[in-house]
Image (cartoon, rainbow, N blue to C red; front, side, top):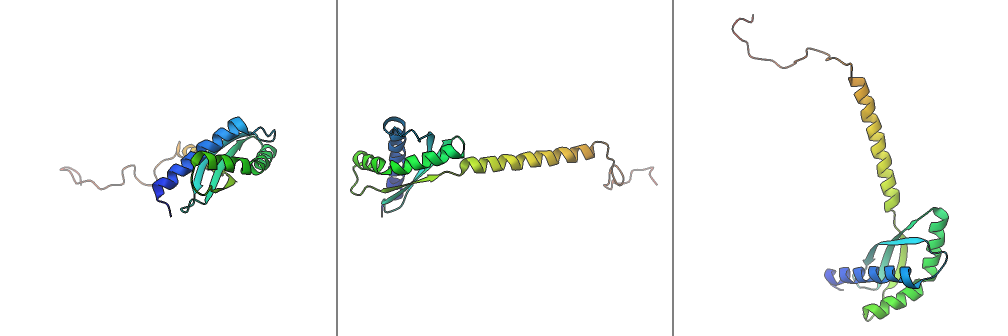
Length: 144
């Protein structure tokens, strides 16, 4: 088992290597605008999960996933050359769910803003159900 700092350093190095490979060396026409968002390496440094996002519609995302799957061997060999570790980790490309989650959060925030606006509209001409000041105050001389 490797320590956590080494694991993080290797994950960061793999992220840079894969990003450079996708930008400069992989010439697959199916590969769209891919961004590597995160890399996670197992504690034994044998497997690396590479999270990515693709700018575009569902067809472009699927085509990019196929291009990444076909280029995995070339990318893995380059990771092995550039890192120089004894065992090159196996690579797994996983589509990142961050854009979908962000879109869902934005929808929820829009719903909350709409509900707040509705409550504000109802409160514009409203009056108190009881007295305007419901708190008890100490008696003053002359109040009876």
